[in-house]
Image 1 (cartoon, rainbow, N blue to C red):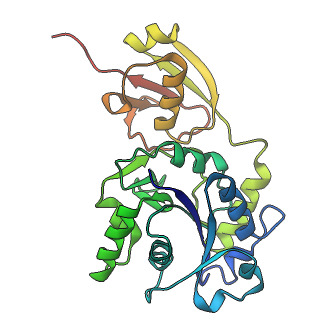
Image 2 (image 1 turned 60 degrees about the horizontal axis):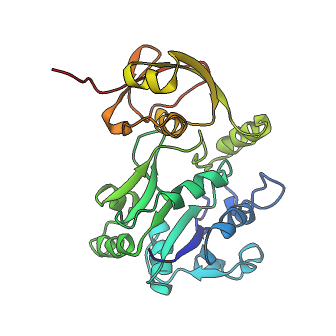
Amino acid sequence: MMPLYGLVLAGGVSRRMGTDKAALDYHGLPQLQAAFDEMVPLVEKCFVSVRPDQAAEPLRAGFPQIVDAVEIDGPAAGLLSAHRAFPGVAWLVLACDLPLLDRGTLKNLIVERDGQSVAVAYRSEHDGLPEPLCAIWEPEALDRLAHQVETGRLCPRSLLINSPTKLLEPHVRGALDNINTPQDREDAVRRLDDQTGGTMISVRLEYFAQLRELAGMREQVIETESATAGPLYEELRRTYAFPFEASRLRVAINGDFAPWTQALKDGDHIVFIPPVTGG
């Protein structure tokens, strides 16, 4: 696979926040620095994406930069400028306004690269669509984005929806929540203050058929950081060597069939239903 570089997107104008989101302090340092520090150990090289008028700002001037070199607005400008500067690499892309992000969410994207998909991204916890600004963009995806932009369509998410993108279930609940407004910021600060070593929830699991045989029990209660049923099942699959892909199962939460992207909460009763065998 192509080398992997990192790109922290810091070229926004922060209109809804009313102040520079990259400079906000959630972890004892500017959020841009926090995002860059999360990225650096995971990639060969890391850069901050900025507009031309931001390059000399004191906060951004201290980082390796890729300055927007295409005359469009929005995150597509940063993505395509990075691709133009280094066309032979893939990019682990991260928006700088994700203070709830954990490094495991980034690592999981890297682990899931398969050399076949043009991008790896998470499903949004809110609408199930790809999250384009915490994702890995392979060169082919960026070539496709360039062609899409030429037709006047600037939305990176649209490109991922209409391309062979590998979509993952959220790794940790709330990790990809964008903090765009003062109200969002207040909520994020509260959530960070409430965290004590990770966002763990307790769920009750019930197994049927072959899953029960392999787990060696009918029910159990576990602590998990999984935000949705998808990564929870993969966690159990590694533990008990379940043979089925998630796509072959159905999941019920609190007595009702549910989508794999439904957010889990503390105390949920979860049943994974294996495929029916026999005639």
